[in-house]
Image (cartoon, rainbow, N blue to C red):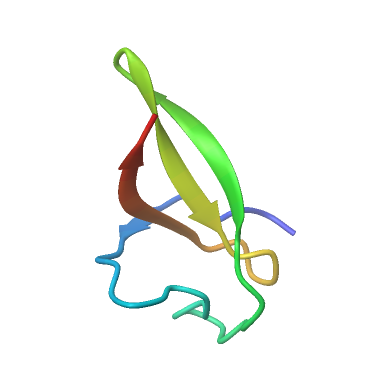
Length: 58
């Protein structure tokens, strides 16, 4: 499985558990993408590999 090259921006509501692309319902994996002096936390769908930026920083 290959990860999607694009990272979609998602605005969080009450819960973000279902992948908008494929409908996978059991949550996400996470990755850390270097961004300046910190990291952006990117959520990855374990089913289809779609990546989402929920604007969390570390």
